[in-house]
Length: 150
Image (cartoon, rainbow, N blue to C red):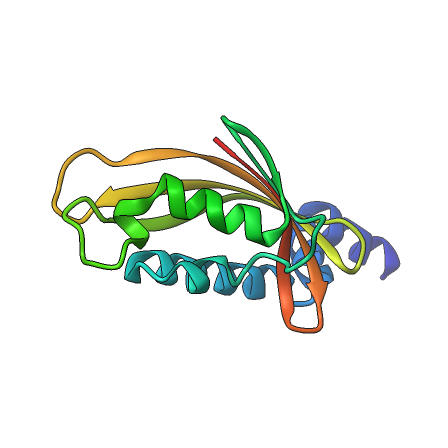
């Protein structure tokens, strides 16, 4: 019987791994969907709610690294004025994620690799890139502590 169970684990390793995350993947994907919905509404605070409010939280992009939620917020506000400006703008976009890889790193950390896509509301070609996110389980749920996006 033990050999049979071991054989099942070898044949279906994904089933065992899915149970190990304790629902973390589903919660993280839900948090990312809520963040994308904030983006779509032009609500910067809702978009950034998925980030940990900690001075060591980091965002790394083509222009370097930002540390802390305040500098990350300022970067998005400056870079995406059309999205987060006070008035509806013609160049707003919709954000979506396609999850490429998910790994638990201990009980309280997860690493996510996803493809992001920004689709112009008014039509036109979409922009896309990759993001590598380190999540930490906090009292308020799973939060990004490190983001590397390109």
